[in-house]
Length: 114
Length: 112
Image 1 (tube, rainbow over the protein chains, first blue to last red):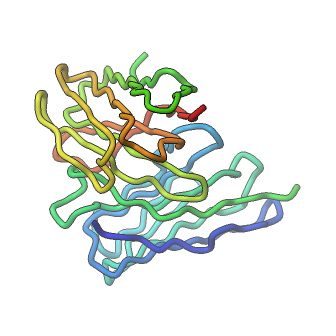
Image 2 (cartoon, chains in turn brown, yellow):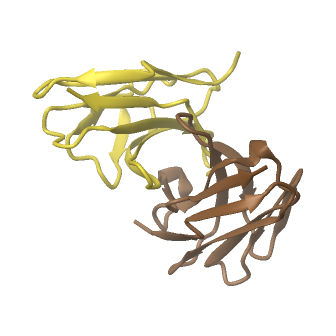
Image 3 (cartoon, one colour):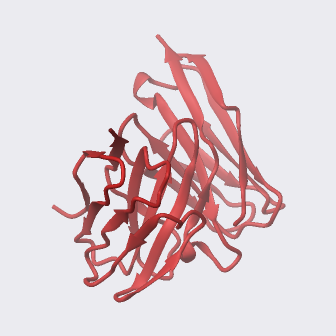
């Protein structure tokens, strides 16, 4: 299956700061998904991207589908304590599409210092 | 209250024992999926099913088995052949042909 490289692995930031993380692949993706996972819970879908160059917002979160179709970015503006958690990017595991399952990056662990 | 439920929250397995993890959804989703998550890692696909009475292996299917007798249910059995079963198991579902998947709360399996 296809693999994703996500960075940074962890981030230590002050409350109120903006956050940026990214995900890259060696192959072309037709869909990029961003999830957030709290400790001991299942991932929650934040943003779904379906078109190269697409920029989509969800409140303070903004994600972009890279123009090369091999990367995606997630930005969080004015971070607050409840933003703490692990953020995962995901895309189709196989070239046939995500209905056959997803592949995930290893996650970016966001830690916010008050 | 619509959603995906997994039970139990925690499960303990003895050596050589098979255990079954439950996953139920009332979202009328077509497809269901099982993923495994190890500490510091992303999720890896074990099995998936797009239609009742049919399922496909994912990347790490060895030592696991599934069934899909009803649209809303997709139980996962961790067999004694799975040598390293300790992990967090997540069930997901989606409408077809959509690629966005929604996850349950997970079951943590520990080996005694």
